[in-house]
Length: 337
Image (cartoon, rainbow, N blue to C red; front, side, top):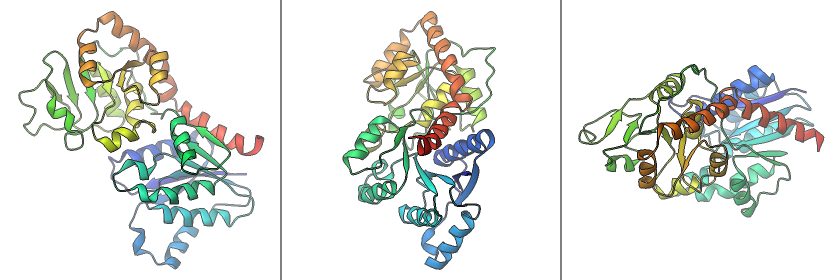
């Protein structure tokens, strides 16, 4: 039996969706011995049915009877494409399919709810589903998910090497991975005591604000920069649709901060909020002003307690242990239960 895993290519290098799939695949292939099935992001509408069928035949050419396929979804080529791919898998006797839900497109964007039924049908055709959180599973069940075997992800990994001989410095600052075009709340930053550090380029609007612009950083460079800067990492959005979605998904941004060794700030509805409190990984606040106030009043000793706890937890994230545990559990559950 060979275990295969689909992997997305062809999106912009800054695509978090692609980076997440690439990370999972790297752990799966290099540490677990899985085989990659590379998928390319493109305009599927340009393919005739015969051309699409031939393309998919090439993608699954290494598949054999009795194998297992981890289908990372969405592929961002559309649910019709994903169903065609699943049809190909089902053409091989004894093949088992695991749907790894990275995101639920119908709940991410305004106007996308109409795709929900199609995605539920897709997942109901699979043998096991990896759901981001228990909250997401409950919501999926309410909308018709019937797959018996469902396991929960909870956290993303972020494999990286970090110089742990030097801990992040105590600084009354809040880091935010994001740009003003997507997150308008940063433009209203008004605290003179707590600095906002943005992975964005200053276009002039932040000149009179307590904001530091560090520009875009990629993967390992971002982790090193955040580790060097210290302070807290913020997971936040004021967009009503995405803010609601954050109650159910697993934030890649959250694990980025933790991998960098800095404590985090999240809202109470964040699925990982209880674990963050239990493990002393950061602050859980209702309002952004509350976050600013708590950071302002933070002492070096209190911050050190957070950093020490985060460093312990971060070893799991940097080592890819959530992914290894999750994928191993998925394959094990297909045959053991």
